[in-house]
Structures are given as C-alpha cells and as structure tokens.
Image (cartoon, rainbow, N blue to C red; front, side):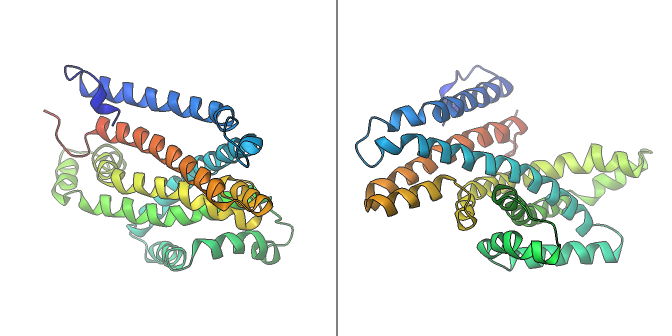
Length: 260
C-alpha cells in the first residue's frame, strides 16, 4: 500500500527505501503511542493501556528474535538437505519431519517443561524457551522454502559458472544463493508474518505477550468483547506494518521480475 503513494518517476530503489523507512517509523510511533491512544478508551481498555502496550512490544521482540534465529536455522537445514552426505540429509530431514508434524503448542510446552528433564540444569526462562521453540518451528518451514529456491535455480547456470573457472564456494554464493533467496523470499515473508501471530501461543508458558495480557484482563473484568477486540486490532496493526516492510524488501529485489 505504501509503495503506491510515492511518485511514479521515482526509481524502484527510491520507492523501496521510502516505503521501508516509512514503515519502520510508523512501527516505532505505533509502539510508542499505543499505550497513550488506548488510555482514552473506556474500561477495561483505558486502565490497562500500558499492559497492552508492553504486551505488544514483547510480541514484537519474540517475533524478531525467533524469526532471525529461525532464518539461520532454516538456511542451515536447507543446505544440509541438499548436501552430498547422506547422514547430513537424514538429520535435516528428520528435524523438518518432526517439527512440521507436531503442533507448535506441544513444541513450546516440550522446550519449557521436558527439555530441562532431558538436559539437567537447562532451565530456560519463559521468554528464552518461547524464542527457542518458535525459532525451531519457523526454521523447519524456512528450510523447505529455501530448499525449493535452491532447487529452482537452473542447473545450467551452475555448470556455466564452473565452466568459467569459478570455485564451488563462489558458484554457490555468487550465482546460486542470490537467485534462490529471491525465489524463496515470498514464502519466507509469509512464514515471518505467521510467526508474529503464532507467538501468541507463548502465553501457555507464562510469557506476558499480547494474547496473555488480553486473556488476563478479560478473565478479571469479564468483558471479552472489548478486550479481545483490542488484542485483535493490535495484532492487525503489527502484521500490517510488518507486511509493508516485507513488501518493500520484495519490491527492492524485484521478486516478480518486473524491473525494466
């Protein structure tokens, strides 16, 4: 939406940069002013405006940290899935199979409650446990998206690069991976937006994020419509701004191949 606001004579890079900066500024202002704006609303929202604001910040931090770790995990898993060594492909495939085949809520509960039993002394705080579980989950989905991008790069380009004398490492980082990342970007963005909403499941282990705040307030006030509507609108605001940022990145790298 923001991209369409800029003058058409601007270059693709200028419109992308303007959209990215605008979305980031709006995100900062939204988080900074959310508590003040909600404070004008009647009960039960106004008296708990700061709690909603803090919950939104926690949700965003959960998403950013686990999303970054998940991107790294997904890249490593995708490379392992396409590696020459059978055992490495099997390990990566097993990880993806287990994570994609079990509910995220079970994974969060497992990391928080069962992992310290399996690894004595590893007692993670609720926030760290949620980050680990979310990162492992989104990493498995990112791995398949990146693997699809790697497999979509025509084999002839790899052979041509090797014929020009490029080493295996240069072929991958200079020829294959940039194209694979461009192809994988739309599903990676979709996974990140979904992660923002999936972070609501962290309430199950006591993380005071946005959903947890809303659930506590509606349980104390018995006013679920106003409370849960506020939670939903806040999530909608966050996902909209995150989508604008991702759209700017996709537009910059020309995912659709429309650049002249």
